[in-house]
Length: 434
Image 1 (tube, one colour):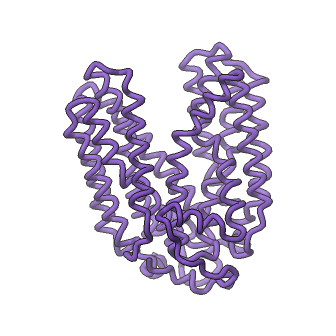
Image 2 (cartoon, rainbow, N blue to C red):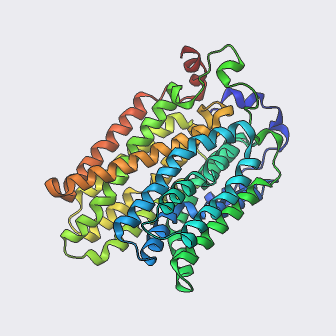
């Protein structure tokens, strides 16, 4: 992959000698990456810190129901928690860029389990304090995703190692999406939903504090210790990722790729139920996640020599084609096969997105860039679910699959039309033009 010009001038790039080429496919690449000095501790602490991210909304619903609350009350609390995350994450990411990870992760690592414990043990459904604490706990969620992904972008790694790191991040997301709810089920089998929620929150907070104290090369710490980038030099560098044309194109593609996921989240159970086997919905969903994980292991088995800005539009087009396979489904088994095959590129698309964010964003704004990338995905998924819910009755599940295919194709079209802006070498001139 073509390196970003700013990587060549990082003074710390020589701190870690280049690793030998990984053998043994993608697992060998992960093993090589995760055994590098000072990398393993950060990677594994980040896994612990991210456990709450993928199960907290479900745990919160179960807890409110256990307390005697209604489903509308449980949905409101979960929604307010998500609202808190959306409102707080850009502000926390800004602080992460400016002051570094240690203070931010320690404060949020303590505040997050504390606010959730107060919500579980000191409030009840219908009280004014419960909604307030739901928002506060969402705001206090440790910014582990943005932190770790910005660390990967700043670490003195080769381009192949950095791509392996983002592939690891994409595969880890798939594993946590599947595994975290299973962990919640195990915890609930030996206690209440409230105990399980509190336990997971404490584990996540401990992971954030652990990540805060990991020793890393100086080049990985926050780079924005002075004025904002636009004030730091005279090149007209945008203050914010949302003012960077290359980042706007990438965020647009990410949103367009997330909308079909939300649409199919509603269409899959509707399709299975319409064919008289609603009990099989979980198995069909599992094929979706398993296909994505297998795709990461198979398609990522060897580093590519093709630059990511060239490869990325092709991956998005492959994702769109995979989405289109669902339109051909005639039964739940054929839908399961379509999802398993069609989801093969999903993790690779996600890894490509993260690689491009790390390459295109100003390194003083990396946490903010990764945060807005995550929010673009969340927004697209939410829009897809809302639109899917509105379209299921009038056009049916197959119609929603068709809409998802069309949106995915539009995302591929945007990726191809904007591929010049996605080239790291073009990002500097684009910023100057802004």
